[in-house]
Image (cartoon, rainbow, N blue to C red; front, side, top):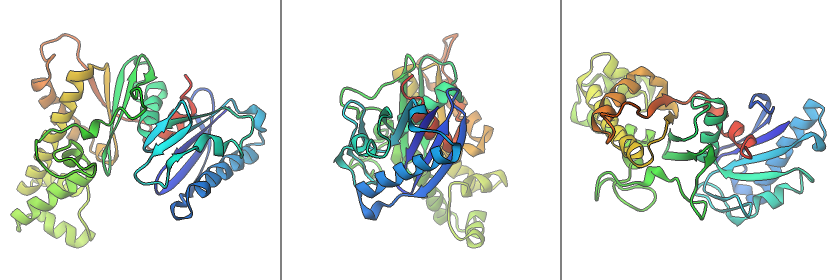
Length: 314
């Protein structure tokens, strides 16, 4: 039996996972960011012990506890060196959690990498040797799997695919650069593009939709486009062009068997996937090849981090 922890800036989710990657029990608690790093790890430990108690298991029956954490997660040292949304600066997460789970093997991994590992083991890319996962959320996360193993560079900081520049001196990015793919293809970027089209086309039905719904979100432009709204269509098409540009770059660099995209926007299904595939097929370097990268939508949803973390030793 295994434990998987998905550590986020808002919530911590912990799950009891079997060797086939199936979550048997799961508990979630708010991340006590203001209380500091020690309190965060204490919450992680409490969640894990609660799962064991509920399942009637002893610590000795746990073969591995995997942690999926945002930021630079050093697998070798068990230290989160830096994390944008958590008070971790060279913090010994594994060593501290060991106080709550004595004798249990604990491994640390970046959250995007863990999600990619989960999708390769039991999700949308099951069985693939080489795969890339892109997560579209507040930012654009990347997880790289080569020969079924996570690749994160010599310093465990690799895979930041959202920070490849696609527009020189373009939109400012949270990382400090300008023109990053994240600044054009995240859910945050889609909201920005939607607002720009709403301002440019005051008669767009998106303005009425937002009055009813209260705010612009990642579905606003897509919903309007499906109703034939010109401004909505422009917003969706612009967003998809930028997203396809980055995805094509990823394919040209890595040539993975499978390229997985995840995040709330992927709920649009074929409405998103089909135009992406059309652009990628026209622009990728291997467009005339008989064997090409397959683009798929992630299937594990919010459980990818828990599952991937629990199976990270494979």
